[in-house]
Image (cartoon, rainbow over all chains, first blue to last red; front, side):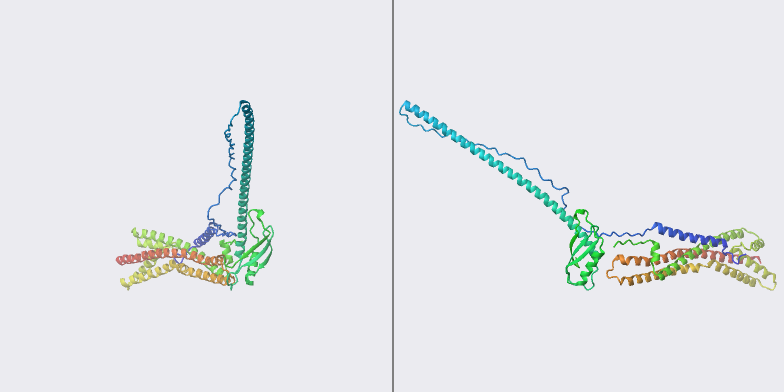
Length: 246
Length: 224
């Protein structure tokens, strides 16, 4: 039947073949389902903002104006001047003089009183006006401060937006091989609200036409340009500057 | 640039150049064949060890040599290696003993030669395909490396056309090329392990056969 004792039977051959095939199927399955070499590259480059100190979380509220302290107006009442007593020749005269003197004194007193009252009123008035002015000024200051902060926030957002666009474009710039120096090219880019580039005009050449062309190609390749997080910040026209080494 | 490199295994294989694909196909074939022979050898050695065990048990339990010979002749197909060695030796010995002119020394020499011949034939059968495993084990890493080198050469040539070479442009080509090395190792590692294992098994069996032949010769010499 067999020439050798260790000759392989047909059955063994079939089984071995099936095993070998199965082995490879198993490895293939492991390779396909076990290992996913899918590599997804994030299209956005990381733009890093460097902060020297952390911005305050909440916008500082305008401080309520301090309670108005009304300065107490103390009308100064001057003590009446000492009455000069004249020599009295006789009683009638004395009486008359006395009467006249009293009258005069009263008149004087009244005049003084009026004067003092008027003065006090004037003082009060002045204090009130000063207080009002102070309050108005404070309010104005607070408003200015808020406006300033809003403007700064807007500016930083805008800067971020512009930086994102520039970063994206810069990634597409293929530097010409014989680039020398670090000249600046300025472009006016007009974009559609969806980030498509409508036009890229060279405003100020870098002096190297090859670099200008490279930047222009990069601007067109960078479509769609990144959009700002706040649609209100979208700028149809952008003025962008590029340098070969930044 | 929305780069989403499809790095699945299949795309790496299909994306490679023709020569690298040929190399990969060759390596896959080598791998399949070597696994096929590995399984065949596993079966063969298992059977050989089992048959040797059972024959030695029967032989050393003190049976009659004529009876053992008759059984070996009758079970012609299913006889193991050791049984065949015994059969050829015993046949030669009885044949020589029938001729009265022959001395005992000549008869023993003739018996030994007959057993040696059977032993050689059987060993050759046991050894078959082991050299293939050895070749796969030693050569397929080099073949895979060749595919990789070729693929990387190509990917670098393409790289020359790109002004700015980023990792993104280099990586896929190299990954494609490295697949060939991976396949070479994939084919080689099982072949190496199996070859070492089978070579050890073969050595053990050969020693058993050798010692049996010596002992059997002694028995025959004592009997005559």
